Image (cartoon, rainbow, N blue to C red; front, side, top):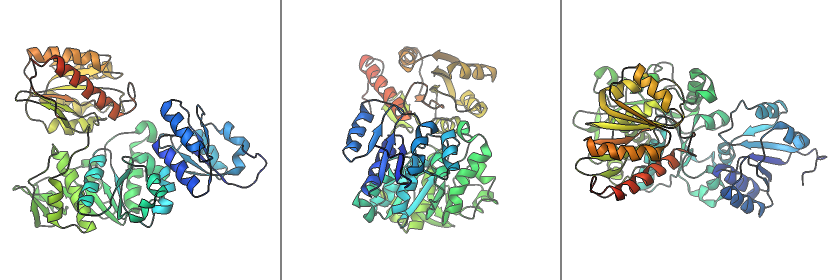
Length: 476
């Protein structure tokens, strides 16, 4: 029960009972904080977490909206409000809380208090940050360091803070979204990496400039900075960004004079003009993944890894799912799941990495209307487009208006679409079926992982029925 007459600020209100909210609440309780949790939804997953937290004397309310009127009766008792990254920083309740002088923070801030004396690598960017985070964590761990990946992917940082494991961490390798950076100004990594920058999340950040400045703030607070010179938006800010190390995959000498790491025409990784090692075992497709690799190598070298250790670690790296993930292949056809392509730039990178005839499946919830470059790439490389979901009609009209001459098929749902795709494959020879939604998943799915898993499930079912057409086994 909340004491409405107390003047002591000792309540920590956690908004959201996802993984990060659950572990933030659990950690705060472990350091003897008074904790209340509100979650706007219901369901088995939340009920299980509610039960677990209530055993720790944490008050949990489900179906509880984050509105100031509900907080008003005990506002004077609040020490902090820990909000989910999905809640906009200009949410009217957050504005009211800040007016009252109440600290509004994220799960990252909570963990930072105990992990701030640990070495941090903070990775941000519109695209590529998850691959960079995962690959860098793998590389460091493969050489004997304890360097878990966390933040926007992997394990919530508060889970490490809650356990004794945090005392053994050599490096925190944290993927940080713009949402997390915005609410965590005190986070100051030892190494900051900026992968790419393109238009995204403007429904949240309103302007491109605001979105850029949020990303930029993480690098400005980092002791050592690594940038991608291949990204035109970062390259255009070369002189105005804080000094750092730059990478490029270009052979253009005018680019090399600005960069510290590149790949030469004989596939050698070059560090400031000196060959580190020859790239021989790297499983990820596409030029964008070579950029990711160079960003990782630059960070690994700063940590202190030798060229040999870096090279050796690449031979046993396994990519994350839903990122140009081959799920089926025979002599005639490859089926690729790129559900993580949640915007047009990410989709372009995937399409550009494929040789030969492509048919593409795209659709979901649009994040913006900057699809002209995407359509230009489709016109050059794609034989047929299958559209589904909320954006299908808009994308179909855009393709027609911008002169896409090949077939366009429109469906409301993915299952119905794939029924037709397999019929299409009986009568048309193509090299690659690419699932590259180019949109967010939130019209029909909880996230891109659920969307990608559903796609893989449907493909698996279709292959069982259509063995005579596509006689090979799925790649697990």
